[in-house]
Length: 291
Image (cartoon, rainbow, N blue to C red):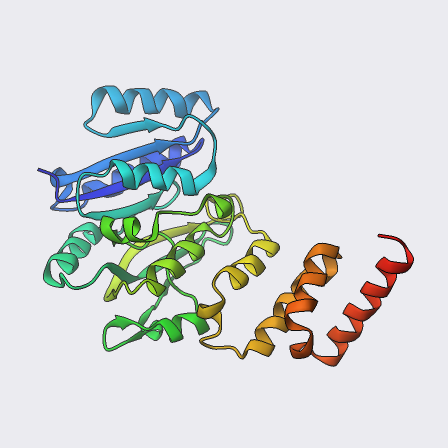
């Protein structure tokens, strides 16, 4: 019987996937680990052949997404198909350090009141070859993830292990952010829904950071949308005026009439003088230009 589940999302990462799978072997609990691989419509023939071989010759559950809908959709498929209460996401281009899965399982079973695990992790810069340890103790208080500290210094790893129940509680990953900040959105919802995070003071993951990595897509506007969608979270460490000005200044370069005028209507009196002038000038320009 499986005790925990590792879900690996894949899109054309054949060589990386082999290394990711190899890292699972270095755990005593390996034979009791359910491995689910979700392919997000890979086009690389080598990747596709490897997945065929894994499906045929191993006990891994290889699932093919019907559409290329990004990481949010693939993660949701993995969580939905997991048969154990503990889920460990693993990007196909990353690995687990030796015995990390053992340590994570022990932490879950010895601390049943917690819903997810936050541990230190190795950050390996593929371009420079430099590796360091990211210490997450600064976002905790008395061994528990502190939401206010996290809001100041976001060190939470997007692939942090969590209970399947926590994923179910928040309705899974949001397809709205599937190609950029899906992890930040997911974890804000997890934490603000009352789920508790246990701090494991040892490295439990190796993030191979590269310009082409699975989590390196970034959309500046999506970060602004996060501030709007999760206003209460960002207000933990910001005043309403400061947050409104940050949002306005992020949107302003794009000159989107419907967005800027709505922001002005909601928060004009909290805007800084320079932003009020920008809004008035923009409004006047749209009137005279008939926009």
